[in-house]
Length: 280
Ligand code: URA
Image 1 (cartoon, helix red, strand yellow):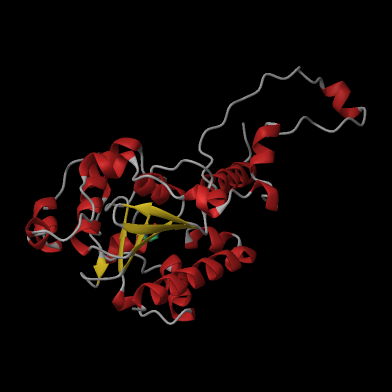
Image 2 (image 1 turned 90 degrees about the horizontal axis):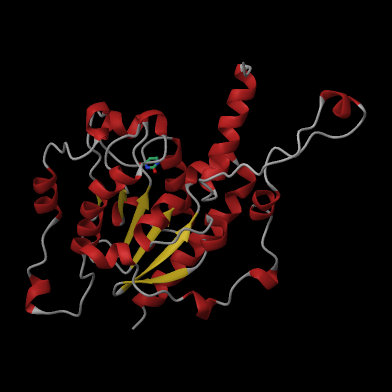
């Protein structure tokens, strides 16, 4: 029987690893340590395999890959369903609108999240935004209001935007999945597969300069990259004819307030990118 407090601590720790992009754990067979040995002053065996503890230690400068090496090909997930941002052509002038996509989504029952939702959270903002944010999925507040990032994580996102002089109404905000996963768990593969084609269509319709992926699930879905978020963050990747930047999810910073500098740094990169892109 695991005491409730320990259960909560384990849940919080797993959530922390999930934010880092670590979702699978493997139990390394270890020699059984008897109680007698433990009481003899021996520390208990580490709860986590060594590889995992190493995975979350900060990267040294030598481990950070050079920027040039990070220019990615268009990821398989995006390439599968999309012709993202091809050069202007008569076809691209007939690009579908967000209304078309929302109409197509309808009263979506394509995955099991439909049963637990109050509202579909389609997305919000400027349909011609230069900057699109992709979060993970609606939480309780978002489910209640039908709008993305309106809870505490949303308030932090607003503060970050304000900090770099970007107005929330000028950007577009959406999520990997449009219905709230129970207990705010990570969206499951079948849910992402059912929902992400709509996300890609939204991005294609908006045709932004930059897509900012907030947290590991967004990076994995949009860019097909599975490394930990702390390794991927702060860098620009090719994404069709646009760029994508990976950063941590605001909820991660709410749980780890000392990490706010990561978001500040990455939002400054967003500001600099948009400024440079707007300069003739
Ligand atoms: N977290 C998300 O990933 N998306 C939201 O819309 C709100 C919180």
